[in-house]
Length: 301
Image 1 (cartoon, rainbow, N blue to C red):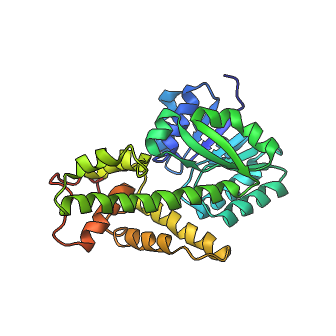
Image 2 (spheres, rainbow, N blue to C red):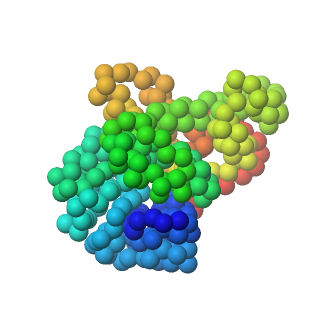
Image 3 (spheres, one colour):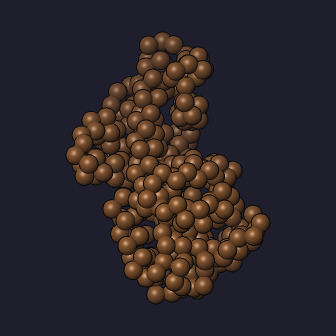
């Protein structure tokens, strides 16, 4: 495929498989990470690792950032700005607040550059398979320019002007966080009340309670597999951003507040565990109750 030169910034849990897919699809890709070894690991996939941010972004037609949080995006953007050519399109695929996305858009506009916020849903598996749901905020023209690259990674949908992508991602994470906790409650209740939780999950998958979270993370909970996918610390960051957006909009979200407290209860002990570790938070509220007998599979501390 014919694509512009792309600089990909942030070779982390999600960024690595996303950048690899782009390089393998024939995109002229430069890879940069604050830890250069992570970018170097993508050389075999066809990317050109760059040790210095300036070298990664200079002359790039499109810059994609996939970074930890809004303040990190802002800091990297500020460092990259003097090296961007006018007209460069910056696509931020990180999960940030709407106001942070709007601030990035304003900084880039002042420099004659363009901006699309395009956070994703689908986790590491979606990144590896190119099936991410991509929520894009920006002008019609800018999203259209980004679309050929984004389609390598998944299915992009324009949801409004700049900043709207982050609103859509927060809505997504609100549903994900709440559903993870409800699935944990359902499976633990099934076992505690004497039913087979695996059979209960199977029985309800085809009904109104069926969902991808019940399918994928319900099985993770039964297997006690908490190797990430999405991480507890990331889900908690998103929960905080949801509540901040709700406050700015004059809303009270009581279920989201409860879910946030559940993740707060385990973030110190299990920050890098999969967000399906909502099950562990629930079990800690119910001493002596535990789903299954398998040992917990957790990331190294």
